[in-house]
Length: 522
Ligand code: GLU
Image (cartoon, rainbow, N blue to C red; front, side, top):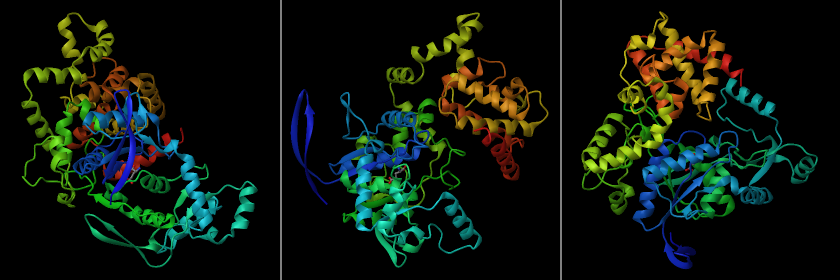
């Protein structure tokens, strides 16, 4: 596939027209619904490598049409994380001399026009079913263990005149895609060859929600087409969505891109990478002191090997001779120990002066100290007290004993439960700042009917390494969300290893009790 395109670029103050033969265009299309995920970085790096290797372009597109889950704050974190790691996109709206991302929430009228066209041509239809009816349908299908799940097509046969009358009368509706009931969808994946999925396993997907926002499937396909994406390289969890996308391409009469679904990253025990086992936030790795080039190098080895067998290489070297067909599908293991040894090798290769610079760029700098000093000042007798007092704000894992965590309480399970509840509640916090954190703990103390002070003891130890330390909420704010949450998980792992943790049935019970007590508060 080859596109000729003319675009305007800027050189100095001059705008110049460039005419190039563009062969490859790739993209990464994250949804800003949480902390920037390591899997996004992995997919981004392979997309960037493929575009670079073929003299093409790589695009960042923020898929923020899920209004309840997306937040600009997560978008900012995502861009910060990708940039830190060396991911660089080649075009986008000008944001003060740099490229911003494309953002779906700014392209709503485009999706509306496209869905209107589909409805007019019969590829999609308005559906007026209430959420109660859909819930009943879902329950019935589950009870009957129906072989076909999903929407039953009730509104698919409403005439367009009748649909118009109901819309004009103000009924709420969504737009669904008309999916064939017979035969199978056949498409190609670069790594897997031909994939066949029976159409009756594909739901009449909602394309446009009642609030006028498109769903992922519609916006994703429309944008991939309009942005002339030639290769969709993404995680394999999207294979099951591909038939919907293939159908949309054919309904619009467009040529689909080539699909290449990357294998999912796995924990060392082969389970899907999840934050319960491994830290998954890119920013955790930054804050814990990993070098970006070590992390990006390690991610480039996930499912990929160079023909010369070399494991340590720079992004530039990756881009120079990247061969997508050397990706293998056996689930790549994201192993923290291996990453740490990569990081150690990279650190050894820095000159002392470079290392000084890296330490300063990381957290050994005045900006970071300035945030700590107001907490330490009232507690300092000598300047030399500062470093030991603040050391926990520079570390990854802390050294303390299980007994410290348990404190005076005899109720070990209770401590484990509190840490778990604290973790769940803190994961929900949008604005990671001290007053918000205090509110979380106050709420926990009320619901759990304990004094705030005793609720806080295990958190002091988990976060600061000791029950006597700098103030907790301020320390957590300085330490940041990812490192703080990670420490709570470490503390629970430590308890589990000592036989005091909650897991299995107890964990399930705790979860449902938690959902009842805390969910009701929302
Ligand atoms: N928005 C989807 C995500 O969050 C994009 C999937 C795709 O690449 O098509 O990963």
